[in-house]
Image 1 (tube, helix red, strand yellow):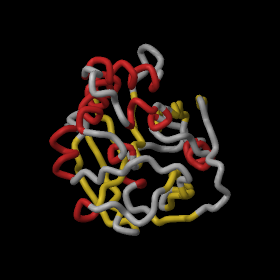
Image 2 (tube, rainbow, N blue to C red):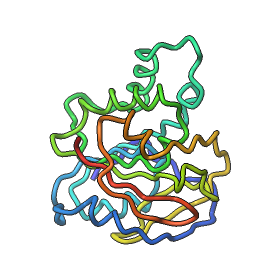
Image 3 (cartoon, rainbow, N blue to C red):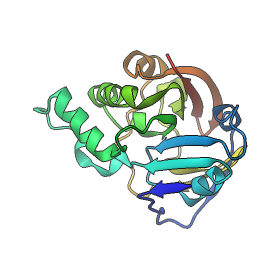
Length: 202
């Protein structure tokens, strides 16, 4: 398995959270199967360990590390936002993504950036991509803000985020209307007013 640009969160406080949708995210993948995973978070050793059961390629992109993606300049065009995203993803030419771990990322960016991300990701996806991320109950910010990884088939690990950016709490309807690269196929209540969402090909 290859991984790129892994960074470990600084905080040593780790929570373990049950998940219902990670098994569905990887349904159909058997031990040793090839799978290419794009993780939009800062990187997590637990995720690498979980994916070691597959013949996996994983890219950690950490899009929130780029300030202009949190707060794009007013004069940035959609094409310029998309170019920043493309450079930050750094997906090798010809690589196609099977699974995208989006975590909370869509709730830390504005609608224009969501649309730009969707446009960049769409041609990078395999013909039957899946995604995983979080939503908000009733469009409100959850009580916690965490950096997540996959601890096991039915468990996430989470560390508090010491430098939380502005949280936008988009509704599921709004995400669905503007993130067209994938569609929300299922959602379940996770914890602290947070929903976990499974995304599939539109």
